[in-house]
Length: 311
Image (cartoon, rainbow, N blue to C red; front, side, top):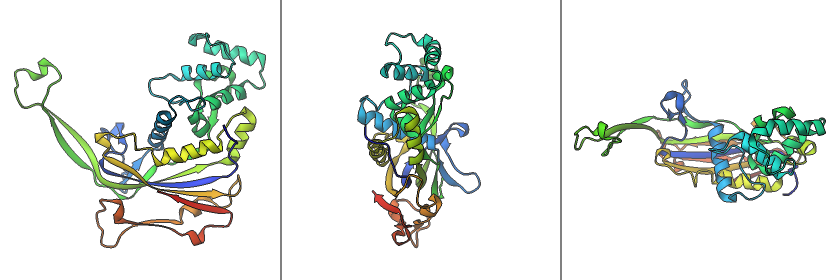
């Protein structure tokens, strides 16, 4: 599956939403997330990673080595068992109820290396384990079940404060006969809250030193091929995630800072400071990406760092 990455990367993604809710907050009636002090919009890193996982799952369609560990409708214990079976560490007919017992038996056979072996099995099978890491609860008997991945995303924040618009909706049908109860035309009522427009920025990091260390311990890890797939997934993470409530979501820019070394050649915050996004003169309420000016101070990129801009 390619060689383990050897260079550190820092990156920044700009994406926008038009007339939609990019990430509802279940603790606030599923309204768009905002910073209560500034009014800036927020999108959680968990939300963005979900979209990356879903894109890879759709693109690879179960190809070996590209399964998804955190997958809707699948238990983590089943995912753990499938990885051990795929790696030849357990017989294919091992009952799922015997997972903890089976892992305990593996530990008896090789107590010094069992944690690394089960982590390696999960990395070899699951793209998102190699990428983001995981807490593999089914491997408690092995010990050391937490695996930190080399790719980390921060929460996204909008460039400017966002407006929240509450919209009422009607439905011309009823769910039950009791609900209808002789009514002929009123239907039922509902509401949704949208952001008319918001441009969001998210920072990310890819730690090559961590990827190499992990690969030495487990025998598997984040490769150059995984990296290119990750960039592809970032650029297209909204393309197959359309829904009426999310409106129109588009990745506008991906700014990649590639270091020459695994440990990095410049602090990440100084690289992010080279990216400038501001409202165009005369624009009070942005409603499209063209209402912003985007630039990168390429002349100030430090030695040992290469900047690439994808859109």
